[in-house]
Image (cartoon, rainbow, N blue to C red; front, top):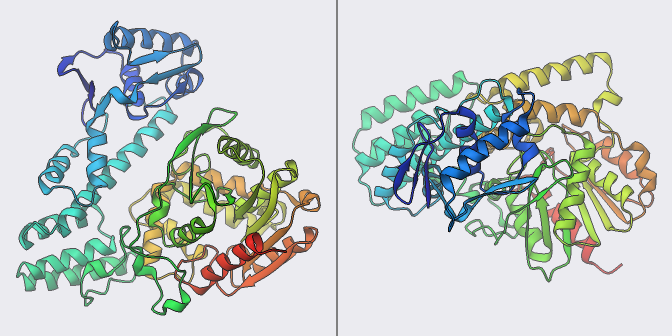
Length: 542
């Protein structure tokens, strides 16, 4: 067993005995990367990740591998294997403190002593002796994992703040830790005030409530309702039911306490060696439905989302529902050289092939509609039906005037500089246009979801890629039945854009739904209408 300590300085024990890692910082960075990403990697990608500067990066990689293989491998145990083109560290033989913390942070029923231990171990800088200032892709990967470690600490603190085995004074200490990690987290604020009251500290609770209300107002956010019964009544990622309408007749038929359907996340490599995360839910005996990726998704976190989760639960009842995270986003590779329409379409091609699908209906949402249109035009024999929601056929660089171009370019600059900050003001610009009818709790959840799903650099790159999309000449080439759905009050992609899109696709059906949201909230009646339109279009006999 290879036991890696990656929080703090990198260290390794093999079968319980400490070993001396090579002095080379890049060699240590290589083994750390392989330990935290235990899957097959191409030599070319590792060279780009760690050796962009040397004249001969492949020789540098071979030298590092020779040092590591002599250290790790034994005649009866080959943990690190390398072929001419690929390298992999055997996942079954790898253990790390980061993985232990991740597992406990995601275990809502974990023993408090184990959570305490994980909390203690999480306080350190991830791979502090493996930083590479001249390797931007590796630095981006490392910063992403450091951010993930902070989020694991938040989850641990949250679990302990609610843990039924802890007395109120200990719950209060954990609630304050949770709040310190994320001062503008609504649930943390509510629980921090509540636990002080439960611990008999009424005056301290009132003072904290006043202070937190002022902090939220200063950040341009609506303060939490501290009069509410408890923080648990507010939304947290584990409680999607807080988004349900008070009138059950207006909701999707979706059990808010249900666990996510069984989902096996898999990976497929694109033609330019980008690893794409994909998976399917719903019985394989059901007819297929493929959703083209759109911004923003995350194969795991989507099941906690007020926008995606209710829709996905519903679609999985009738379909073998295949989806994936696009390149640069979610669980797919973030370190990518190409973010473009061609790259998006190529990834869709690889996913449906990996899923073994020959002919299938295709669902495209937002810019995923353009990806779906392009795919359907290239592969008319494989797409049986096309459903487009909130879509468009050309980005703003093809249609905008000079003033609009200046405004949108300024937004991209703000995105790159402000996306990753704790204060969600920059991300809030997008949340409000995506979902103007969302509650403050829903907006704050989506703000954080954006930060966890994509890097600041990639967020700006996505905006630029979307601005250049142009599939206008492809619309007349669509031969399959098509349904275009659009929110009448969509503030991001105007209703008229959807109407024109349907008019240009031969024989397309069009349906407007009553919502102002570009991304539908599961609790709104429009979401149920969207699911009904999809079912009727795909399942009802013609």
